[in-house]
Image 1 (tube, rainbow over the protein chains, first blue to last red):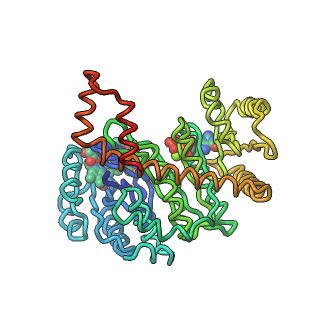
Image 2 (image 1 turned 135 degrees about the vertical axis):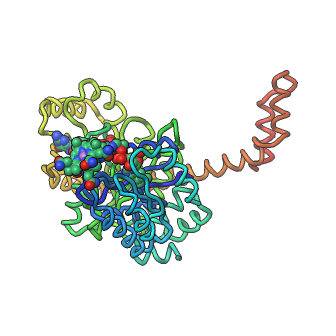
Length: 128
Length: 312
Ligand code: B12
Ligand SMILES: Nc1nc2c(ncn2[C@@H]2O[C@H](COP(=O)(O)OP(=O)(O)OP(=O)(O)O)[C@@H](O)[C@H]2O)c(=O)[nH]1
Ligand SMILES: [Mg+2]
């Protein structure tokens, strides 16, 4: 059964190229991608994840606000009872921030230059 | 989680899980549908279709907000095509509806067509029923109107609205054949563009030439969905059509016909699966096919025999 992935950009960051590249690559790998666009609140993202019952939430940020926004999304997903959702992050994220994000529940973080096949493999390895 | 109990208790997560169960044909899907069926039949279903990019999602977003303002709860099923190459899909309708996540009275579900089109209309129908049982007053189904398959999906609706836009050139010719019959309402979106008056006249003429309409003449509304202009009139037209169907007794007729076609489709599906299992996928059947190649036997008696044996 097709794996459902929500691709979203929390916060005010308008860099959407990476998110779109990821969305297309995931579609081409056979996933059903719900692309939700830019300038979303963590609450909007978590609620959309609930209503579409996705297995994966993929967050993209290039603005530098990842340390607050990514963990906030994880927290809201949990509050809504979505405990099994795989949360991935990507974008311009300094290496030093990655351990903290992982501790906050972001399973994996992908920085510029990542081949999209690595993202596909990660999802396949972690969903069922 | 007891999906049925929780869904009837207004738990959104249960509604989401219930739709996934029917969408993925999980083992518990039939049980869920069996239990919720008695609680359905209250929602009024609106189908919205039209060419790609016409503004259907933008309009759906605005219509849902208008209904919410009027005190109604709203469910939305937004369908986008599956890529025939990868089997994946980008479901982009929700991008226009992100505000709706803040409204407790509204629930949006994205669905991919996933190839099997007969199956899709059944799954759409089941998703609609789950939202109905959950307590939605109005349910909107958005599909891209390009072919027969979408026309079938729109048949799950009580009122069907066709969205068109000016500047489509000859496209209007291409879509009019299939789409004319299903439109209870026509909406010219992007009325901020040139060609709106011309398109309006063209639709008027099409309607004029169609003898199908007695009692209800499809109204033609104009909207600029991106600015929310003209939406109230569209909602008024939907409600007028609903009233017309109710008062003329046509709603009961439509729903009876729909139940019949739904049950017929379920029966066909079941019989097909049964025949696949008992006949088509057997070695004996293969051997018969081989014998037909050398004309040792002919298919007509074989079919008679099989039907007599398997479907008695
Ligand atoms: C192109 C670009 C722009 C374009 C954006 C076009 C668009 N619609 O996307 C424009 C010119 C508009 C722009 C504007 C700005 N930009 Co700019 N921009 C870039 C640039 C050069 C490339 C980004 C890009 O598109 N890369 C290509 C895509 C495919 O790669 P990607 O996004 O990194 O995605 C890959 C991975 O990161 C990963 N990935 C990304 N997201 C996700 C999500 C998931 C879930 C997963 C699994 C993987 C994943 O997979 C992708 C494929 O490998 C970067 C510098 C850089 N080298 O990154 C700066 C950069 C991001 N921009 C920057 C800035 C500051 C701005 C502006 C604020 C500039 C200004 N002062 O006006 C504005 C703000 C725009 C806004 N509204 O938010 C800074 C951000 C600094 C920071 N983080 O602290 C950067 C890093 C440049 C810099 N070194 O200073 N920008
Ligand atoms: N000028 C103008 N643009 C509009 C109007 N309504 C919607 N749009 C824009 O048209 C584009 C497509 O809108 P959608 O609502 O996604 O259209 P859609 O019919 O749902 O598209 P698909 O689902 O992809 O077929 C968006 O950029 C909207 O902002 C309008 O009334 N006028
Ligand atoms: Mg749409």
